[in-house]
Length: 360
Ligand SMILES: C[S@@+](CC[C@H](N)C(=O)[O-])C[C@H]1O[C@@H](n2cnc3c(N)ncnc32)[C@H](O)[C@@H]1O
View 1: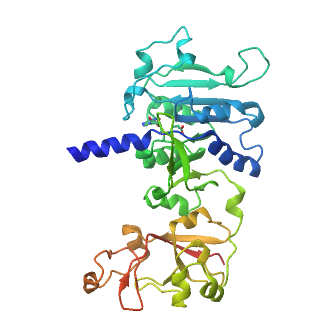
View 2: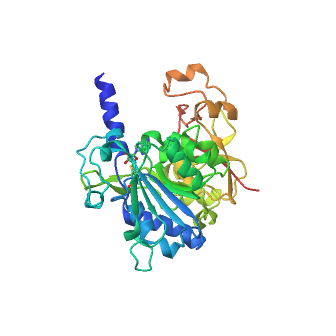
View 3: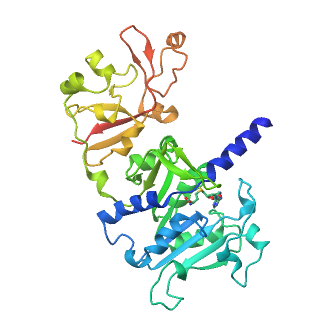
């Protein structure tokens, strides 16, 4: 029971944090650099937001005319439906409206729409945002929000991490373009890895450690987040600059590799182990196992992704089961995961590896 409570509290906390304006700006600019018309004439939906003060809403509303948007829709999740409980504090923006209802504000989500000039200053900007209560609580899985999803062209948000798998499935079934934030560990999920492998989705541009905003307004650092998208950007078409195998063995910053003077071959699969994306040899044509941070550098014209050496996916790739007597030497060995035998005859299991091959 105590454990369940702790887990729930953790999930709630993991879901309730907000994205900084500068991070949104930096990322969205990368798509605009590649295609200045990427948002022109488009309806953008920002679900799982808190539009009164979300930086996603602020950013897109401020740039409405510059991006040539057709319509901006942003929706929030009802405070009473959130797992993370905090005292509900309506904003001035809300209370100043005649239809403000203190009880409804707790139990219903809200929809904010920006489409035309309502203030009469001949500009469409943040002051023209109009809001209403949703019929339900704003759950992205509700019929009401699915309908908004289906009416939009592009979906942008930082969704609840506890529902990340579901959120990606929800996006994929809509066939829409999107830019979202997620945890880098999600790449191994069975709902997500095949999409990355088949180039249906890819990493955005500004991945890695970032500061996010806590409900109390303070900042905290999260190391493992990245952007996932199916909108093209220039970075993914830039091939990695690589050294040859012999140059790596002499000069690689990975000490292990220099000491060993060779790339190790796995004992249960015909591939070499590469300790980092910066140690991928330019002149090896076979399969290579690389850490998942490779995805941040992945250029589909340079490499193809063969699979992931994890559990059932690894077994499907044909990774041989490990001989049971090796378990005594290394209890962490698992079928479906890679291992190699080191110079002392000890079976070593590297961290999760993605298997890749140079494009011919
Ligand atoms: C990681 S926060 C990000 C908020 C905002 N998009 C931002 O980046 O500033 C995710 C938000 O989704 C909300 N949320 C949780 N479950 C949800 C659901 N089922 N449907 C819609 N929103 C949900 C959380 O309450 C939280 O406010």
